[in-house]
Length: 131
Picture 1: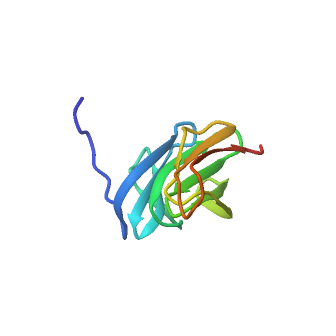
Picture 2: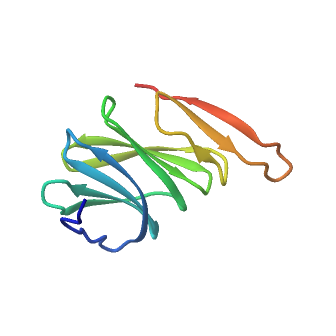
């Protein structure tokens, strides 16, 4: 249990969540300042792609089956991106969630705990992931 390498976040700070594509050799790191998703090569540690996301990133999930990346953001959205090939990604959509909501670990049926807000009661929201 020792640090064997450090990889800088170029043009981004406050990296918070990460997801690993072990088979694809990529790490996805969510940053809050500015809101970005950084993609690293796990062999070299090189930052290969920087993608814009919404603010207050809470978690990042990578689905190896669909090659989709889900960036759960505290501002009330989940960014959905698709891996097109080894080093290119396409933003598909931003799905509205609840501001300040928290998400369960990724599964084909995602769950969000939405806090009470703006006269709306607290609730649990379930999402179905299309593969």
